[in-house]
Length: 135
Image 1: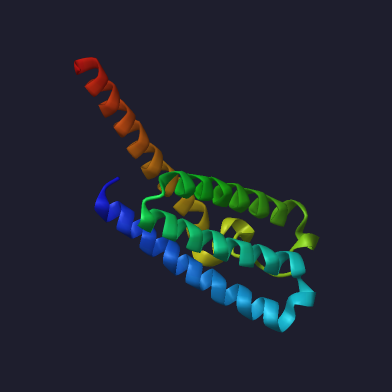
Image 2: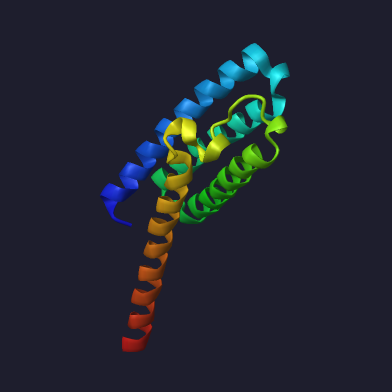
């Protein structure tokens, strides 16, 4: 993966992790009984964002890919359920409305991250095949 793209992803995930952590801590400590599912989802998303940032930093590609797949699934599921069964979400989460409260970054970021991570994997596999063929 391009080093600039990798650093940009790390920064984006770290910032989103801090924002989601702050949001979930405030929600859970001040009004958890009002929307326990929504606030728990915010906490899970915060942990996931931090984990992905660390995985990218440490170059743990498999963990980063797995985390972004879970993140994308979460955004799509929670975003869809927010419209289908809005009574489950009396307050917003990071992923409600497909991340609209965060400028849809929670929806776009895993798509961009997966594209970059998987493109890098394909490029390495092609290079490895060329070495085997040439050798």
